[in-house]
Image (cartoon, rainbow, N blue to C red; front, side, top):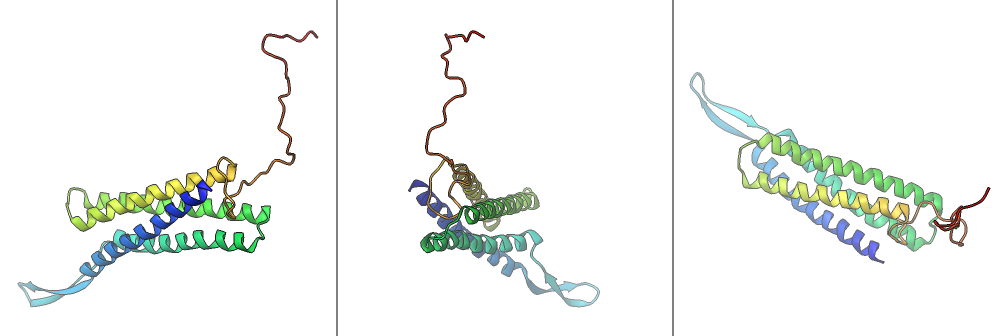
Length: 190
């Protein structure tokens, strides 16, 4: 099914970009978090502890969160689909949890790249610029995941994965007929 391929691609790409973002942000944190000696005119050399900006720590958290969420979003539907016990109630709970999780992760990445861009203002640093670029890509991926999950819940896109099946199913197989099946040129006489 097309939706399954799209979900595999989006979740796999999100995981890989989360690993890349984690590597970049962890490098920046390790470069910042150290103690250096600086010369103080009043007392000689003093140890100065330098700490990374809080937004970089938040990006490390967001990267770890993204990796955890993407693995869970791949494993949970696969497990329940293979088990064969996807009830409508379970599907509804999983669909709602996927929508909520993708929305929260999308907000995390939006906050991360917006705050980092504000923090940098006019400063140009290759590592920070790469972190912003990957954060924007991750934000776009989670926007797409949110949209595709909502489309699957509404029945617009078809999938057999648990959590991505339509939440409401039509009770009868007969197509619904219009209430008034008179043509536009005919008028009813009442």
